[in-house]
Length: 402
Image (cartoon, rainbow, N blue to C red; front, top):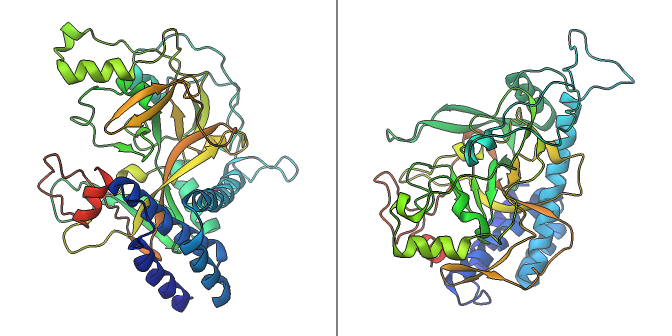
């Protein structure tokens, strides 16, 4: 297995420099990332009993398959892992009515009134609940116990401990407890998803990152705010995103020029309802902690990378374990990027007709064992970066934000 992994690593280095990638720096970096993810997740899908011929076939495909085809395969590989993870969570939390409950595990009541969700705090004051969905009965296990049982089933879980990064702002670090192979989905990035049409609803807009370090952006422009999720919770509950936040007037906010322009081009279509009817999410999800991964210090290397994952909303049995909710209805407003700006587009998005939730996961770039999760933040080199930030690859940073 180690021999095959070395072959994959060599393929990653060679293909990342291939002249077949797009000339546009940003698109080039995107395609290089997709290529790496294709190799890592396909390698993981092969399993421990993989043969050399299978590995060589994947490496050959990585050099010939189109970016679109590789993206499709990555989605299949990630979904395969997510589905297995969700089945494990079901085994831990859902009662088996045929076998009966384990001794001392009385079921949580399903008719409990839903609590005010973290999302309502993120987008504004709450109003009366509508369309209250019945919350399925689950075993009343604490999150620590759920985490321990998940490790028994899949071989690893996550924990928060003081980071080993040597700077005072590192704070809590994200650690893998157990073992995970290369290409494994290590963590899910939780929180509220904002499409470009709804940027102005991000708390603190337009200076959204001034007081929030838990924002992350996909290549397609969707922003995920993990701040409302925090550390998770101890129950399965409903998150309701139907509240319309109060937007300050231009005069009140003191905004000028570019800020007003951003609001103008990002403003949703008139009459659009912000939010949805709500989703029942499992707050005890042990892997919904990707927002606590730290950037490696100088001389250290990242061991995970970001992977876009479009969760198909048709998979209703898995929905509770995907720790995200979309603000607004992304189907109502299509946006198209031109340079640094997003504009409303009347054209229909090209792709599958299946509705998806545009999320992010962290994928291991090597085998992990009882260690801190380190993610290359790739902060833009066009803005002032924190003193603690040491670029892993300055060229990658430049291409990502070109």
